[in-house]
Amino acid sequence: MSTPHNEAKVGDFAKTVLMPGDPLRAKFIAETFLKDYRQVNSVRNMLAFTGYYNGKKVSVMGSGMGMPSIGIYSYELYTHYDVDRIIRIGTAGSMNKDLELFDLVIASGACTNSNWIQQYDLPKGTFSAIADYSTLEAAVNSARKRNYRYKVGNILSSDNFYNDQEAKWKKWASMGVLCVEMEAYALYSTAASLNKEALTICSISDSFITHKETTSEERVTSFTHMMEVALDCIKE
Image (cartoon, rainbow, N blue to C red; front, side, top):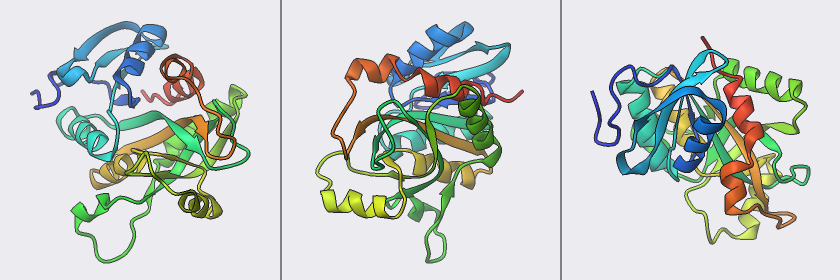
């Protein structure tokens, strides 16, 4: 059955769903990489498509921006559409001097400045939001085989895009955090709460250190390395 945010029918989604933030990036992936694809959702223009990559069924759907948005869509995919794993493919700002534009970050874990985890009413403490290891291993193997530049490590999922003081991101960087984005922590926590699989692969779109940045068009069409790595993670 459909949901308030998704008109797809049960069975329309594959077991593996790739989730870029931008629905136009989802459309680009379907048109560029998938065979025999069809659109399965257009509610709120959060486009979703299902097709085949190297003979394996896969879906791709936009998540929107921020933890509340990916939280809604990932929860519904896991619970209403019987999806097993979601691979977020997004952009991130580098906080590491060795990460250049278009480099990949495969997120083994995610930190956050959000109160997202409070909804689960855990005992006092801090929940470590981590990736599914088997999917992470597949992504690393793919990036290595394809000879793409990548790092594996911890990232920051932030609630704010603007007005972050320089001293704050430098403190995260001093703890080895590689980059900042806005969704991974919620995805990893949602997957953990439902005993599902999740991974985040980011392309560096800008740098806090060099102040270089990509264009809006490049963010839609030029981050193909992370798309290819994510597609290599499809399981039967």
